[in-house]
Length: 561
Image (cartoon, rainbow, N blue to C red):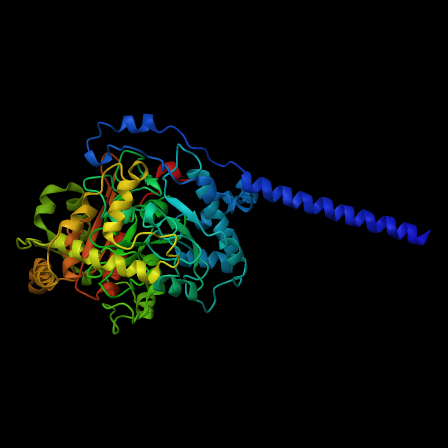
């Protein structure tokens, strides 16, 4: 009798376990087959932009023809779904639009955990990116391990770098182990790599890589006169301040739009000439293009080893300095790496300059042409800054395109040979291969052509001629700024958006843009500060001061809750 009872109980337990296992398998299968998003007909949206005042915004498509958002969002869906809207709303005052020190303070006080911080951002991403009426087409990959990694973190960041536990998004030309690094191109859709050098530095300090964001394909060195923020992988990135109304800026379009919409604490972009400054300005966020050599380029899909650099993109200057500090490190593999520069401690601990000590140049033609710039300069002057009217010399950037052409012709094959880990999945080995590949698959890959890639193949500039061009352009770029910086003893020169990004690029000078205001249409505009090499600490200090005086940034209305 006892044996019979035990046997019956055992069979019941076994059967229950079997049912539970079947239920779990069924739940897993259901989760894997859950339809979160369906492709839609974007022809009406495309038609609505056919006569846009800006030719680059006359789109031929909006949604990607190849990316299935279900594949992107399924892995974390069940956990994100379990995070209630009530909890989200309770956390909103402590996270949305708050800076990193404030977020870390709230976590230390037990208001929420690092896991809930990730869930908060996932909630926003799922809410807006799965709705075809609000999607920015900006998130193109999520790190399926992000929540598990968040759970393993300590309860607070005492003794850790401020970036500890902060969810960060990466532009999808930056290597991250576990997700493809595509540069927006289908030819690299299966490009698996190790972590880029700067990603290693972030992970060492406990940062959480939340995922990858869209970009202008091949960092906008692909088509000519085409929309910024378009890639074959991700589709057309849209501006949260006016979807299909305003440009996103490029090529770090996804980094700018995602941070503006509040999808993560911060993002990393890259710039060759304007690719951080432009999308930061267009999306009312803070973007820093460092001095060439401050941050490593190792593991990043290149355009130009001469001019490329990654940089931080954030909602405020404080976070920008923190993210920059977290990515610092001397990389012997980077030929332009600078060994002796400012330290992370200087970035994190330098007190803000007194505005009365700040001396900057305001470009006279911009004062005449742009009312917002003029008004903001006058506000800064009233607050105590010394404003010196300047007229930079006439400078030509002859040969600039050849730097990009010849560098990419040599740098891309080297990247593919060194970092593309599965050569059988990445068939291209050169720019010529990419051009051919795109022609063979043109329906999906190049609705706007590939004029810039084709231009690389026809550029006959020799290496010797290229060296002369580089030296001349660096000299001319520095002359554009130095006449005022040196003669007037200026800390920086004030520009707008990416207006003078090309000069700063060839000069290899750092630049930071901060929100300056909004046009009558609602389109954001940025105030850009450009300084001498390795003056990042000073530029960030000045930018922080100006940010507090102007207090210009507003969250985009459609993404405000």
